[in-house]
Length: 252
Image (cartoon, rainbow, N blue to C red; front, side):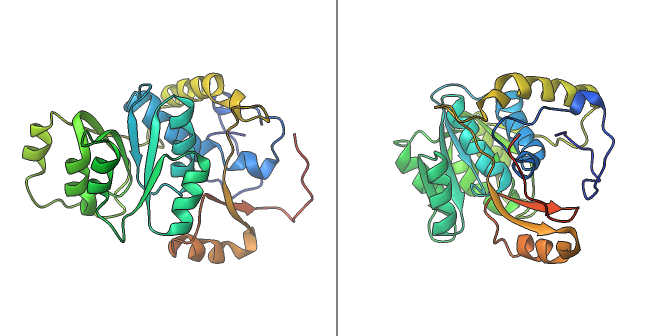
C-alpha cells in the first residue's frame, strides 16, 4: 500500500518507493486501501502538528469520518483522551465503540458547552477541525488555555465574521493549519517512515489493535453512486472503490 499524490482511481499507480508501506498481516487489500490517506493525515495532525501529549483531551470534529475514526484510535494509542462531534446518534455510537470517551451531536447541542462539562471547565487541549468557519465561536470557546486548534479543512465555510483573533489571544491559543497533499516528497517520506515505525505494527490481532473502518464498497462503474453516498454525508469510515472485477479477498 502507498501514500498517493492523487490519481487513485486506477488499477496500477506509480509512486516513489519511499511512500510504500507493507500491508499489515491479518488485513485484506480492501482494508489496507482504507489506511494510507486517512490514517497518515490523522497521524500528521496529531503527532507532528499538534504534538499531542499523554493525558490531553483531543476534540475531533467529524468523528465518524475516515480521518475521524483514525484520529480516535490514534489519540487512544498516544495515551490521550478523544472526544468527538458528529451529526447522528449512529455516528456517535461508532466513534465511542472505537474509543471516544464522549460524543456530541452538533445538530442538537452546543458542543462547546458539552466539552466544558466533560473537562470540568478546562476545555480541549487540541481541536482537529475540518469544518472551519461555521464552528469558530464554539471552537474558541471550548479551547483550553494554551490549546492547539488544528485546521485541516473548511467544509463549513472559509469566512469568519467576529472577534476571532481577540478571543483566541485571550486564551493564548495556537491556530495551526496543515495539508498533506501539497507537502514535499521528503516530508511525506519522513511521515511514512514515522507512521510505519510508530503505528503500523498496531494493525494486528493483538491486545492493542487498530482497525481501518470501511463504510461500503463500490465497483468502479458505480463511482457516481459512491460519490452521491459520500455527498449525502451517509458514510461512516472510508468508502472503498474496486477498480477490477470483484474477487474473493484473502488476508495478507
